[in-house]
Image (cartoon, rainbow, N blue to C red; front, side, top):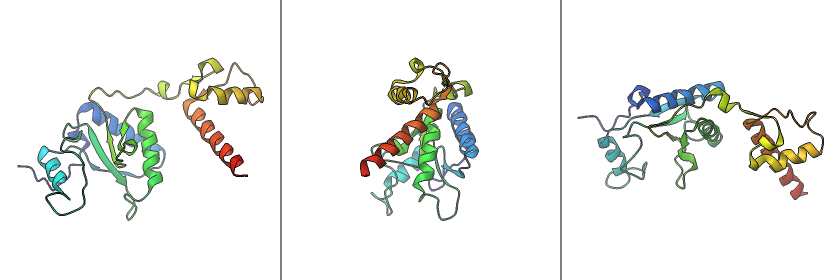
Length: 191
């Protein structure tokens, strides 16, 4: 019988797709200087039941809302910030990790109605996005995703680009431009 009080932190205990996703996630977090520590991967059903009982039939704070979990299916992992005293307190850290997960096609629990900021999961058919997909460039206004088209059109009208047929905009650049635009509009609204 497994010790239900002990968390498994072994990435190798996950299904192959989740192993690949978790490793890609850790690699991207490392590139961005985020000190990620895996706190749990696979859970036996006994451990899931043990955690579910916490705060209900056993003393403690509620730590899970379900008896079914992607952890028991070997498709999920939990993390913390690997800095003593800041393991779960730094919201910006988890937000950055969540953005990395989104870029990789990994589900982040921080976006759920009942947020679980330290939780990440995939489906069994997850595939890593190739570098070319992540770094796709939009050269013309017609290629730009609809959510960013109005902003890029405004920038074209104002002469922000040397050549309107060679914009060379990445998804990350578009998102940064959109956030900057929102910030500037919010500041103008306060004046």
